[in-house]
Image (cartoon, rainbow, N blue to C red; front, side, top):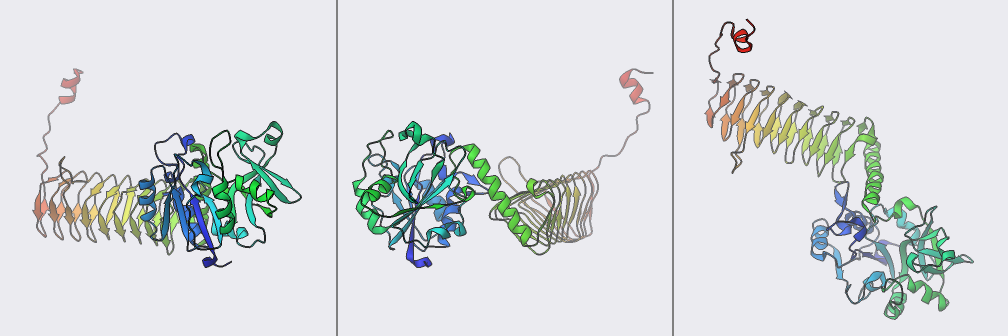
Length: 434
């Protein structure tokens, strides 16, 4: 079945009360992106007709997805009068004859994992997996290789609760089946909700064929709690790291490295243990050393760390940034900043050396100001550069100097150190030891 012959409906209307959060469940993030993002991304690989059903915090969900995708249809569920998964499918209009129904809390779904649903002769195909502990899942009753019915846990008998074959929550229907049975759904159950799973029982009673597809739990794992969220993120992180290692990135102790979904690597790159690289950072032919953090930044032909921190909107090229250096919203090209410095809202040009303990004082409590440092500038240790300030090319700043706002001209030396004094025997007088 090609991409244009299947429609996908993603159920993303639930509150997710077990998450114990004010945030909509599908907006909780793993590896830097909302759960729903990963499901939509996978869906777009196999379909050009995607509908997301929303209700709780619908404006936030729409805004989030529209920031990534421009071809998604949204339908608002009437969750007051028609709660539940069956209620979510009311008033759904799709353009293709086959409809794949996904859940918005399954971020580990991949296009390959959905391939099994794309070719079937059954009237309905649903996903199942076997669990040692099926608690929380609907039980699937199978007879003679056909699904007889699905029983939600709260409606299951004692015998049915012992069944370990559970509903993985993914279904393939024909549009005609949905149009026929969705209007017939009732909420005569413990939850007083309209269950999509009741379509299975009604279709079975009418003699339709209902097959079960055994799937891997990893790909269809639902996220219902913060613990589930952490487990899913661990799996997703392993996938991301594996992808980049297979693309040629060297990682030391990859299980300790956190890399978000939007990060990209080019060329020969090394990432040491304990690093965190986030946002849409781009690492090009660079070495990120142990326990460094790179947030929404570009690093090209450079080395960072160990224990360095690049905050958002930073850009490094041909630069060495050492341990305990923090860079924020700054551009450094051909620069050395070996240790213990803060460079914020600055532009620093090639050949410049930033000594230990140097600080760009970019904030006066109300506004942020810019520091501009030219080529071949030497800034001595423990200096403070009070922005707005410009150090032209070939400038020297003596150690311990506070450079006030203004411009230091090319070739000049800035010095503000006090004259040294020696007071004889002061130690003994102070501590009364002599």
